[in-house]
Image (cartoon, rainbow, N blue to C red; front, top):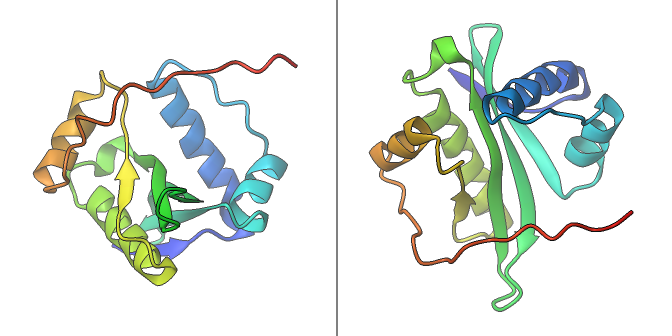
Amino acid sequence: MRVTPAQPTDLPRIHEMITALSAFHGDIATVTLPQLEQALLTSGLSTALLAYDADLVVGYAGLNFTIALHTGAPRIDIHHLYVDKDHRTKGVGRALISAASAIAREKGAQGMTIGTDPKNRSAQAAYRAMGLHEITDAGPRFWIPVDQ
């Protein structure tokens, strides 16, 4: 298993995984390849890591960079973590989180966050099995629509 930062040639495969993850959650991915390139490779606000089994991309992590305004400390949110169905329970997610942790250390972040859909019990179980600290007191989040 190896994990590498995304390159421009990886964007179509990342798009496939985003589409699959969205479908899993009952959503439709509408992001375009140019939007992905801007978000992951140009903006500096996000990046992606790809997990390989031999020469096959089997998963990815989408990382968002931010700052905790109350401390000024860098923060990283693992916005997406996707592993192909046939490669789940084989350490792919753990490898992606480990690589993301290395980036977090380089950026001076003290930790990262990762969320999951409340109905995604298998992801929750995997994160607990990895020993990740479950945040239960952060409070609910709310969606604020912005009229166009």
